[in-house]
Image (cartoon, one colour):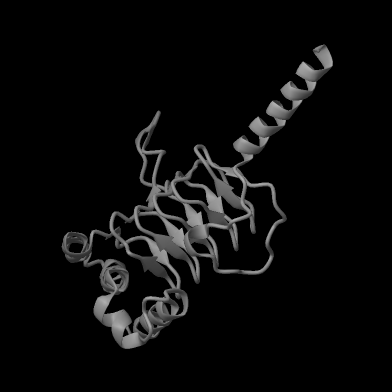
Length: 219
């Protein structure tokens, strides 16, 4: 449990570092519903590992009621984890999350391969998020896919396939934006960048330009 307390302190420090509205650790522990949910998860995960699984699920459901954040006790989450605002976040049973990951409200890490020809599946069915990842509000990451280090998921994106390290993806379904891969972790709130263009929008603009050129040629 001692290591859990150290990790919780790292989680709290991550909030102070990334949230301008939280100036110190005292306010992080007092006001952050995301941190409250993470603290509860750390306890529930410890109970789950000790095979006190009914108790872990009960505490987890109570936390969901109080914070609006649902984290399955079996999920694996690293240090420096930050859930901003929090309401509506769902983290499924076989989810794996690395260090220094930020999730915004409404994010779902969901499972898709629930049934196959052999019946109900109990193996890996939720996403794996590596390190230094930002997931914008309302994004859905579905299935046993891998999100690489330093990746960013735009708000309301629906991610169904692996995302390479350092890439930013947006849209439904999510597609990479046309920009250089980032090899260094850079924090941007909501994974939003003013120079990130929707790849579908870029293609439509190219088509529009080509149509304009063809019309001029016909005239």
